[in-house]
Length: 399
Image (tube, rainbow, N blue to C red; front, side, top):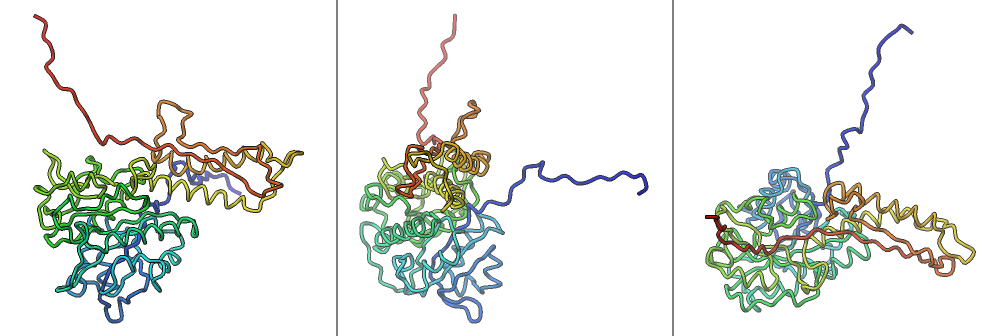
C-alpha cells in the first residue's frame, strides 16, 4: 500500500436527535366523502393542507368545516406535521365519534396509530337548519362527549400503554358564561374543552389549539405569551361576541380553554390549558398531562425489556440490590436523555445532581412469592407564572 493520508468522518459529536413525535395528534371530525379520495371511517395521515387537498380532495367547497380545521392546524403547526384523521358522517356527533363502541371509529384509529397519537381533538360541524340542543350554555353534545373522551383516554393508557389527552370543541356557546357547567368540579383529567373561534359562527377554532400544541414542547403552556399571538387572521370570537367584549374571566374560571387579549400586545392568545378536573388534581393542566405521559411512555418502553427477565434474589427471595440499581439507572437515563436534556423537566440548573427524575425500587419486596416488581417513579414539573403581583411605588430621593 502506498503511503497516503486517510480521513474518516466521525459521527455523533453534535448530539442531534430525531424529530420528536410529541406533537403527533389525531383529529375526529365530520366530512362529506369525496369520490375516489376521501372515505368515511378510514384512517388517513396528512402532513399539510395541500396534502389534504390534493390526496384527499378536501376543499372549502365540499368540506368547509374540515378544511377550516386543517387550515388552522397547519397555520400553527407548519407543513410537515403528522396528523392522523378519521372522518364521520355529517349526522355523527362528538359523543359518538369519541365512543370506543362506535364501529370503525376512534378505537380503530388508536389501534392503527400503534401509540403514535399523543392527543385527540374532536369537532362537530353542524349542518344548516339542524336543530341544536343547548344545555348549560353549550351544545349538549359537548358535555356527554367529555365522559366518553375520558374513557377513551383511559383505554389508550391502560390497555394500549399509549397515554393521551382529548380536547372537545365547545360548540354553540350562548354568550352566558354564568350558565356554563364548571369543568373544575369534574374528575376528567385527560379531557379539556375549548370555547372560541375565528368566525362569528359559534364554532370552535380547535385546529389552532391542536396546531400550537403540536409545535411546542410537552412542558410548555399553550398560552405562553413569549410564543406570540395565534394565527387568527385578526379575528376572534367567543360565541357570536368579539373576544374584546366577551366574559373571558368567567369562562376561564370555570375551567375552559378560551381566547383572550393582552394589553399592549397585538393579536389573540390562549388563556391557559386547564383540563376538566379538580384544582387539587396533579394533572389539571395539559402541560402536566403531556409531561407525565411522555415519562410514562419512556419508562414503559424501558421496563418492557425487563418483562419475564430472570432477577437475582437474596436468600429471602428479595430483589437483588445490584439488579434494582441497574433498572433504576436504565429508566432514569432514558428519561434524562429524552426529557431533561431537552429542558422538559423542572430540574434546578444550579444543582448539577438534580436531573428532574427519580426512580426507586424497594429491594425488600419478595418477587419470588409474588412475581410483582414495584417501581417508584417521580418526575419534576415546572412552575408556571399564572399570576404576577408587583408592588410599585416611587424610589425615595436623598436631599
